[in-house]
Length: 364
Ligand SMILES: NC(=O)c1ccc[n+]([C@@H]2O[C@H](COP(=O)([O-])OP(=O)(O)OC[C@H]3O[C@@H](n4cnc5c(N)ncnc54)[C@H](O)[C@@H]3O)[C@@H](O)[C@H]2O)c1
Image 1 (cartoon, rainbow, N blue to C red):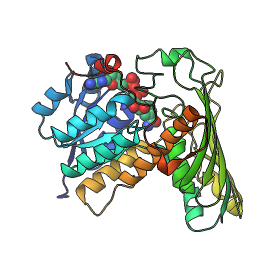
Image 2: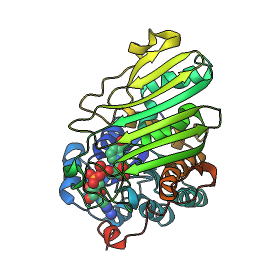
Image 3: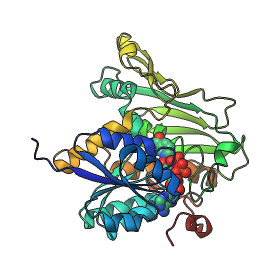
């Protein structure tokens, strides 16, 4: 019998993506789902029945009644991740698993990792597309120089999010709680850009709202310069109609083209150095646009909590640079000019304070 510590997890927020967490927890060796919580009890009830766990409306009650919980998955509206993480870390001293986009502002990323450090707990940022086979294969080809030097990069996300999607909840489509297509949908591809191609030095970005009546951008087009000399473009929209078409990243490199496409960067469509690898490294995501990465992330979380030498791959520096880059696109659009990513602070719009909205997601 293994003597390794079991990681006891509680979930806050039982909405659309929470099933990927709950199912991943119950199927991960070394992880245990203790309780779930949602302001809407009927959503918690769903998992109470499915997994035989306790359910709550108030996460403070959940944490007080279950001191055995050592790790909390924060799956609340994006603009609440910061407030919820700060409380869970400082008052309850728990590790936090935070859904994308982690936090809205680079300053919030710094704050939370610092607090986690001071309280001797960890922060686990969720970027599950990193685990797509196609992404891993291209990363390997870059790391072992099979692809050679990267010359150009193109990100293209053409998804359909109609008005009814934004009307699902008050937080959607707002700068304070959600951000637009870059923050909600594109954050995955922004993270992958950095993972695959390294540091981005300068960006110039233009944003529009073209398909829905929302305050945030549903369309963004940007040009990027990379430290390694490559240049790239990014086109992200949720104003495609009437269906989702693609989320792709392609890299023109010294030794050929690497093109990852499909609905969610899940198909290796072209890989010049070894065309035979394409089929092997493509996954079918039909009916599951979120992919299969959450289970792999939970295994990494358990490994890292059981043995500190197993470092969780998304470091604080990683999360900071992703959110700084995200904010750089907004700052460029706000100032209508190229911006140096490393000098960017918080965008004026993203994650701006809105207590009326935040009060909907606070416990009284
Ligand atoms: N990794 C991915 O691919 C992925 C996909 C979808 C969503 N997400 C992220 O997950 C988060 C949630 O998204 P969603 O689509 O599930 O949203 P959702 O609106 O469906 O669910 C959010 C849930 O949080 C609950 N909630 C809010 N405040 C709470 C509180 N104080 N206590 C308990 N419950 C509370 C709400 O009642 C709601 O049920 C967002 O940050 C989003 O960006 C990630």
